[in-house]
Length: 211
Ligand SMILES: [Cu+2]
Image (cartoon, rainbow, N blue to C red; front, side, top):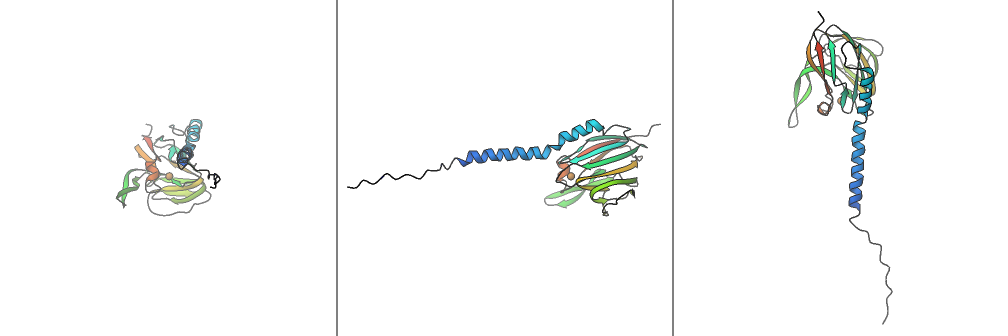
């Protein structure tokens, strides 16, 4: 009778251990992604507090683009005021545009129509000076009358007036508020309207001229 030695068993791995670990890692990654998505929001808020942005009579309206929104979300101008929109893309990774208009132009896409741009372009017939163009990926002048000061960005024709800024890009648009009082909207229609839905939209109130 031989006594077989007790074999040293292989350390057994509990097949369940990785599930809670996986869940924990997933939650950490998700939280990090959410922070990454919205971290520019407080910076934008601070900028708006410092520089105003949306006040009537402010000569320069600073508009910040981020993933995914605009600061400020409401702007008020008065007909006849000379205004500069100083547009800055704060996103480190995404291209953003800025259209201003009313109503939507749709195009068939997948299961249904997608809003591609505004139906009525605010910039139609407006004389605009574009200056300080920096990392403007492309610019659609639409039916505006544009005067370029400094480097002229790559221009494409067709569609709403719209500068598209690469990450870190910026541009100034100077114009006299046209006689188009009422409520207008601005938005970024990049990625089949997804940016707009995600929050890249705002309103402009244009007050009648002072009498
Ligand atoms: Cu965008």
